[in-house]
Amino acid sequence: MPGSGRSRSGFLFAVLLLSPLPEAGAAPVADRSQATRPERTELATAADEYHRKLSEYLAARRKYEGEAALYWNSIADKRRMRTAKRRNNQEILIDDYVLTQPPVYSGPRKPVDPTEPAEEPSPRYVPVVSDFLESAAREFHFVPEQPRSESQYKRAYAMTAAAAGLTREQAVRIYAFESGGDGKYDVQAGLEQPTPGARAVSTALGYNQLLTTNSVELMAEKGHRFLEVLRAKAARLTGGASESLKKKIPVLRRMVDFSRSVPDDWSAHERLAGTAKGLAIHALNLDLDVGPLLQTQKLLDSIEFARSRGYPGALTAAELEMMNLTGDGNGLAIVTMPPEWRDRVPTSNFFQQGGYERNPVAIRNNVVAKLLAATNAVMDKESRLPGARELAGYFPH
Image (cartoon, rainbow, N blue to C red; front, side, top):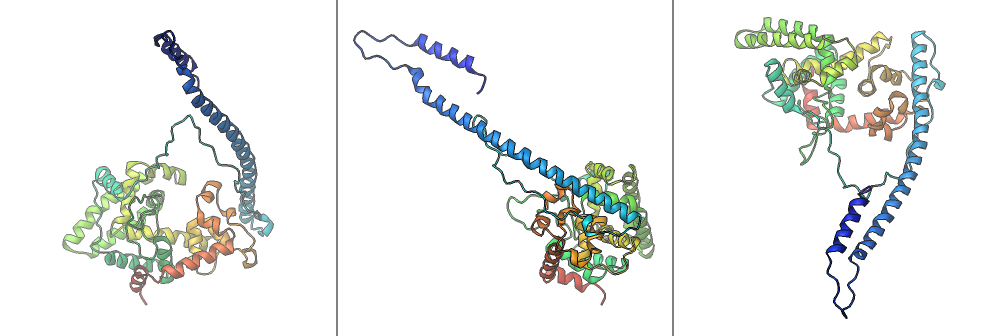
């Protein structure tokens, strides 16, 4: 290791001291220290090569990161400008968007230090369904009423979505896009297929792939309405079904109170979502009474946002998915963009740098027209699968 020269010299001195002297007339014994010289030379050469490559890599990264900072700052500046224009009812022009693609790092890879042991970074653990259920039981003494079959959940979701005003086309095509066309009510991002070694890539859960933060935020903002729905349902039921639902209502109220213990802000809700109680709230998506309400409300909020901003028409499934994918404000900007601009405006305009770089769909389909077309193509394909067709059958005709 670098810096250990003193101990290596001491070792070699001890070897020389303990080595027997050669007998008279015998062939001289080779200096044993010479055996390590090629190895030391090779290591020194490798270290020199590593430092040379590291310098090249760092120089290339500095150059790229400087260009990337300028680009993403301009994205943020243009976004603020568009927001101000909308607030003042001013016309948005195409020049209010960045029309170039983000820089891509094309320099050398970071070299491997030959003096350090090779270590594979451990992937960050993402909580899964079993964690949500365990947290619900521990934190709120709550066990979700999971459906006896997938069909039972699909029927409940279709009834809830239709009653809220979602169309069959919106609900089914978004289900197809988000869950792969055949996903179960407990499908989680990264675990869509039961393949060995599969890992969850996020906490996105269910037909519309809600994150833990979505669940906490929806409970904070709409939990009072969910409680009203459950009370009305319990009043219509009789016997054991009514009693079971009435026991669920106080648990839901405690979850609402917890979700409202911070300001109504995404970052604050994100912090709550990472706690054990936040994971417990996410388990509500698995409940036959509450899960469909949460999954439906996520889409309904986007539709209501568009209406509140004066959007007159019904959103197509792909347009609604844009709001789901990029956030309501960015999604509405895509939806209302003149068609003749869509081939020119990069999708990077609707993301922050980190979100864009983690989104291969937005990178591959790097202008608005391509992103909309790709989304529709996936929806067309996945909507033909059995799960999507079954869900469609539960919507009123």
